[in-house]
Image 1 (cartoon, helix red, strand yellow):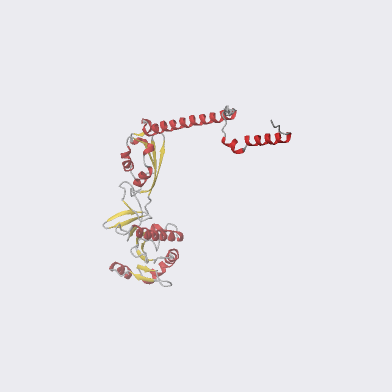
Image 2 (cartoon, one colour; image 1 turned 30 degrees about the vertical axis):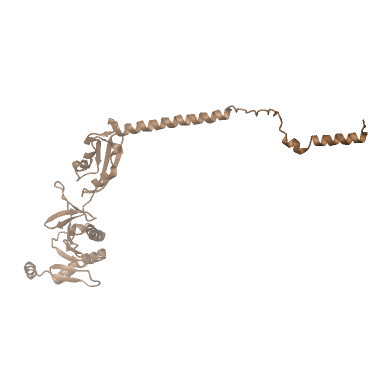
Length: 312
């Protein structure tokens, strides 16, 4: 038997070892057993102090919100349907500021609110209805809990009598024509040219001219408005006024004066300063025209009575 030399044995062992652990052989060979992996430990986080505080706040806010909602619901039902909130009788409506307007006229729009909560009464609509009454200039309404309504009226202030067709009615500065109350006495001049067939805005403009004239003559002589008998506003450019007491406070002679549409104070001052002189020169005066600048036209009274008075 042939013995291998030591070098040959080493070479043969190395060759066997290389063939036994070749990479392709190792890759194809599957392990017979898999090592068990260590399980991942899951830690459950315990509720700390801060988490408890958060959940406690959520619970408190939720309970408070539910309480508020329930309270609001019950409160709303009480305010809308409780018998203590209902308008049951006319005495629950308080009224102030009325002198001409009757209480019955004010209560009429509230008839449909009977047995209704005062919170359900449409105050704006009732105010508009009240302001449709001719004598009412404005109305203010308030709810007085639990079951009352307060109505405050501002009535219109008439400033003149208006000749309307065959009737004489009252009129205010805004051109609103008013019925004459039976139990009230007024002393105003009569205005014409502002009948109800004229649009409201035109009546208001003409009444503003009337107001300017009355204020202007009052500045010249206190109490001068008491001598105004009638004002014709038919032609706004020529304000025609019937005056008395020009010669003296006790003079009842009626004189028609044309004032134009401006400078009422200056023209009235010229009239009262010169009327006696004009009358002495022409006799009894019927009309005076002051509407032209630097020109005065005095028309004597040519009636039979005036001529007889002049000849005596």
